[in-house]
Image 1 (cartoon, helix red, strand yellow):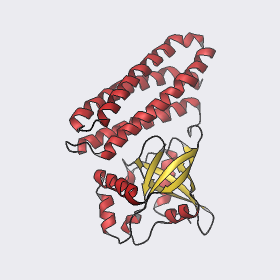
Image 2 (tube, rainbow, N blue to C red):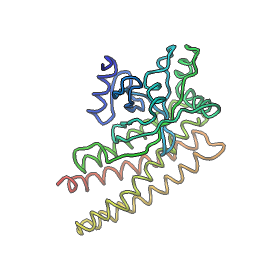
Image 3 (cartoon, one colour):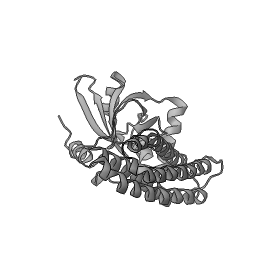
Image 4 (cartoon, helix red, strand yellow):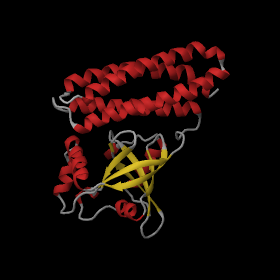
Length: 275
């Protein structure tokens, strides 16, 4: 039976490319579908998550600080394979329950960016489980057309950059571990996306539309410029004594250049892709 709280969130998430209002507004959110440990039926819930590089994301079984682990956690123990919806992509993932020092380290990262996780832990005697979800099989963006897919992916990058800049505004002088990871995960995602365009989309378009050569050349040059900014941001973030004052200007430089690039690419390619 659908949960009265979750179901409207699920419907809004799917209708708006992962964007929702209300309680989850501004949060990094996924939909997780597990297989019921007893029923064998699919069970979908909206969950906040922590970025953890391009390979995986992290979720926490807080259950609002309640005395029992959430149903989705028990489902994953019985069947670790699950479906993840990000609003852009839907993919199959393998769940791994983190234990010991790794679990404690990740949970400390979560509390560092949102003390609510720590408050939930104080409300219960159980140890809140931390679970890693690693993609094992995926597909194209959840869009009705190639142009819509491009816009959906671009908007996800815009939204993530907006969240990161908000986190910088709310952080102190020191650069927290999770904020570092958020920056690095963004950099990895952008590199993967641009590599895919350089090796697949752009050659495809250049082959079929020779008149696009100047546009493709410009987009390729912009990718190279953005790659330099990504490398510079990654280097600064990875420095031992990095602080927000040294990293934020690199985030702003990347944001400015990327937004200009995305706007141009959409204006040039979406009409062609959907024409």
